[in-house]
Amino acid sequence: MATKTFDLSDLYSEASIDTEIRVPKHAKYDFATAQPDPSSIPLKGLTDALASMLEKQGTDLAYYPDARGIPELRELIAGKLERDDGFKVSPDNIAVVNGSAEANFLVIKALINPGDTVIMEHYVYSGTLAQFRKVGADVVGTPMDDDSIIPEKLEALIERLTAEGRKPKVLYTIPEFQNPTGSTLPTERRKAILDICHRHHMALIEDECYTDLRYEGETQESFRSLDDSGIVTYVGSFSKILAPGLRLGYFVADDELLRRALSFRHTGTNHLTSLAVYEYLNREMYEHIDHINGLNRPKRDAALSSLGENFGGTGTTWTSPKGSLYLWVTFPEHVNATELMPIAFEAGVGFNSGASFAPNGDGDHCARICFGYETPEKVRDGIALLAEVMDREGSFKVSPGA
Ligand SMILES: Cc1ncc(COP(=O)(O)O)c(C=O)c1O
Image (cartoon, rainbow, N blue to C red; front, top):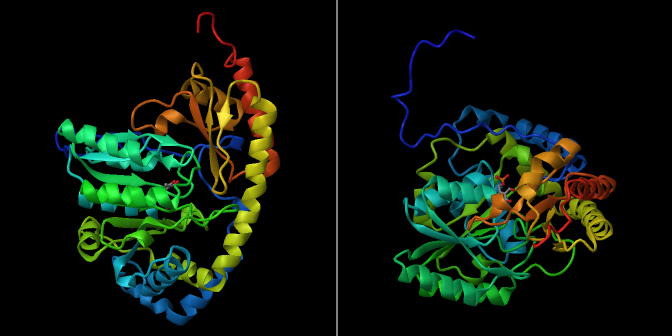
């Protein structure tokens, strides 16, 4: 490497932060990220779909793409939303971008000024939490129970924040299989929350990237299907039903919000990937979704039974989601899962402690266990190994006086 002779230090922008580059590390038992089963990625289906689309319209790759993505994929999404999420939308109000992470960030940038107050679930997806913090939002977690957000507590929180001069502007929520807890918000609560948001003039971002991953119970009515006034921005993804490496997700917004969100985007969406995903999903979306849900259910079951066998009687509790790729574990209060993380990783078990999902700064005694990537056998063994490591570390011994 050439010797660096030019000093950039007084030239960096105020907004840039010298952050560590996140290089994903994978433990032997990888429970850290909500990833799909690698064997479920339809490699042949995607290859065949791409080949046939390239033959039909490959020369279109010569154009710089539409900032909202190819029309075929937006039409397919509109059809899927009508069938699965119960609302009609024009493909013109759908923007396909680099994953739902980009979708969320664009919408956040269109809505949030530094210092604006935002409400999220008490424990919430760390990526979106980081995005809100990046734009300088004042982020507050709202109380949850087994059915996610508690509307009365949400309203009390909004009233308190407003009285303190911190009137919240946005509610961000993951209604189906909330990440990280796996809970689903019942339709009645969604209606009450919409009513609260209207009364307090708050926009609502509905992040639905897990809604297709249901293997039990009933999907609840989406916020967007309950309210088409413009208050709801809907975010979706192909990462969880296909693969995160595709980097394709989308958002649905009314005209002006869509234009403002896209004003932060100076690039189009990968046309090649979009062609493959469009044609593959056009051919076999629902067969594929059934297939992955069939794979995930035994993994969830393996996680639950291994937790019962290895953590029963330790004072640990866990959620039992009816779908998705993860569950939420609450250890006894004195356990510090944040400190345990590197120790468990060394021993072969990767997971994320609750602290990274906590807008209010708590969660050290909690953990998210993602079971989607590993086989049921590895899920079982990895959880047993985690219990072994925690036992070795004295996690389940209550210190005198505690
Ligand atoms: C709730 C939620 N939103 C958004 C994302 C980002 O996903 P992607 O950008 O891969 O669509 C994730 C990823 O885990 C997530 O859990």
